[in-house]
Length: 392
Image 1 (cartoon, rainbow, N blue to C red):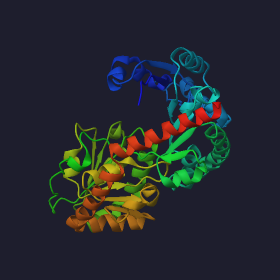
Image 2 (image 1 turned 135 degrees about the vertical axis):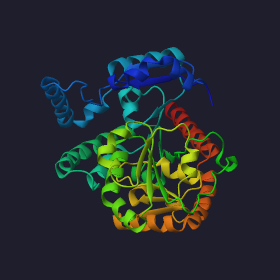
Image 3 (image 1 turned 180 degrees about the vertical axis):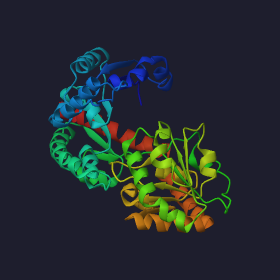
Image 4 (image 1 turned 60 degrees about the vertical axis):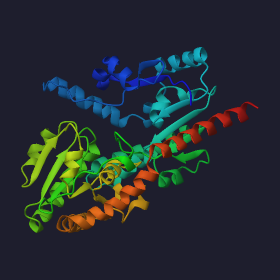
């Protein structure tokens, strides 16, 4: 649709990525100019040393983060805002596109009114916090703090979204919550080397291989908390009913650090990062998505169906995938239903796979590159039309 320059928002926790500009340029080879600016600090990272002073400083920083007004984390960063204004004047952009509302805000994109802004919200900020409050894995004391955060974020997010010329959400339920006419669904899609409809399926699973697969990055707290809950509250019952069942945990990050919590339970195999996922899906009877918090949609649901594997998910994790329920995707309202569905899929692998293939057909249509491109074009052109109308 045009030439694209990129402004990346960074902070100290991303120093290693930021320093490797050559890799960034390779990953975004189609982009024109790529620049990096530091943002309002969002994360507090535990210190590498365990001295008393460093721990006191760390917990002091965390306390400050917790009690600060949430609007602080949406304020424009001076360095980035000045760079953005300078780029607009120099290059004469037609539209700004931001990934996440917070990135749009701290970049200064929403503080200017010269050109329209399109924001891919992905998650609704307040819904993420509200889901944490509802989650069974969140301690009561934290729920009280999060309630106050959610109240503040709801106000700030509504104010900022009203400044957008167009917003994308990851699902229709999220879009319905916005109440904005200038909005549309931009579906999350699974990463894949070739289109789904032409990709070869992994080989059939041997009936004698009762393997449950979990795929997710360890860095994402919702993955860790959801899986810990599954292992503590669901896995023992599954093993009682299917004694040779195995749970394989695959994904980037420090999953090996969970061995003390997860790896001691019988039948659990912590694999960590792998070179390719196809063989993992090929050996799995089913996949689980036991996450209990977050907004947007869970891409791992689509990825499993893309590989022709059925998915047993918490009811929260099926949000936005209502059309896929019964087509390889099963939503469980509580732990007992997760146990029951996992056991049934382990005992009847072929039926589960047949349902997953129906889901795969729908994913190939609704979550294709073409579907995404249509949504992007719709949103960008809508924003540009609104800018023309406003100037007129």
